[in-house]
Image 1 (cartoon, rainbow, N blue to C red):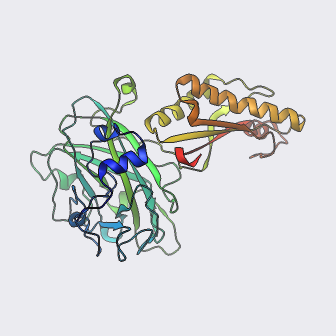
Image 2 (cartoon, rainbow, N blue to C red):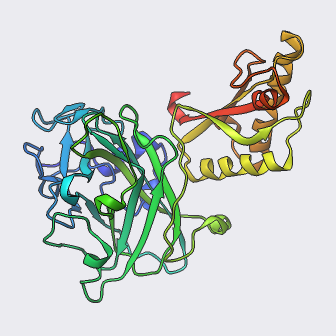
Image 3 (cartoon, helix red, strand yellow):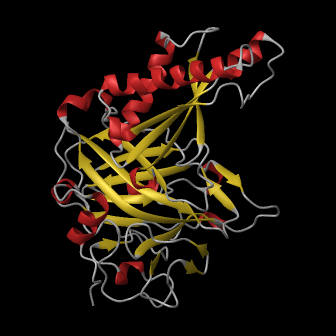
Length: 373
């Protein structure tokens, strides 16, 4: 049986642009097409069309059609399916180096020297004892099928003669432990021209895994839900942002719907002009938003407590607008930006000294999905 949500209708519904169908090189990107409604644990490879598991780890498939392996409630917590009815579930960290992975066959071999962007959404299951700080993405020329349940290490991979690999690791900022929202993970890379399959998971053993303990007395693992996997070619004019071919990539992502402060967007007293150091900081956010077209940004300006409330309100408005205008000048669409000043009502440091006042003369931002604004 196949889900009533087809691949093309899902993309049309949630991305709004049918051309994305041709761009995304991943079949069945949000696990909506299935052989059978999931009825037991560890049956991902048999349930989901055009996806497999490269090891004997028992990856799970969840779908709203099921009472046993359903959504939003399941054995590891509660997580609504934002991109249809189904998603994958897998352990990225567990006792005795136990691991689970998901493996996709690509629509075509990647072109050597061309830049691509890989992205997917993750959410940490509520019953996880740990959270991991990195996700690994491995491309291979041949399909992997190893009789192991531990980490798919470099040693294990290179036991297979003739298989070619391209590996990258995507690091988090502070949102790797989010159990409520779907968090976007993405990076760019340069293809070697041998990539036919893609695997997502944790490729390190326990001792080498960067992790965070979410509960006292933690003994179990880090279980993540994964959804909406995409692999797309990047336009040639943006190729200067790609990573070197074959190099391990670690990139920073931003937690959705949370407040972040521009590290270098600080203002001189009574001024709202962006400094060169501030512009570099804003450009990094611009690049991130260009890479992730389904997101938008809200900019919030702040002042210290010197001056009247009405004056500081106007000054903070101008500071937030200065950042928003620079994003627009760089090329970001106006309908993906909003801005607002808050005066000196929300200090993050003491206003009793210059160092604290300078920290309060800041601009913060929130990145969210387009439909949430």
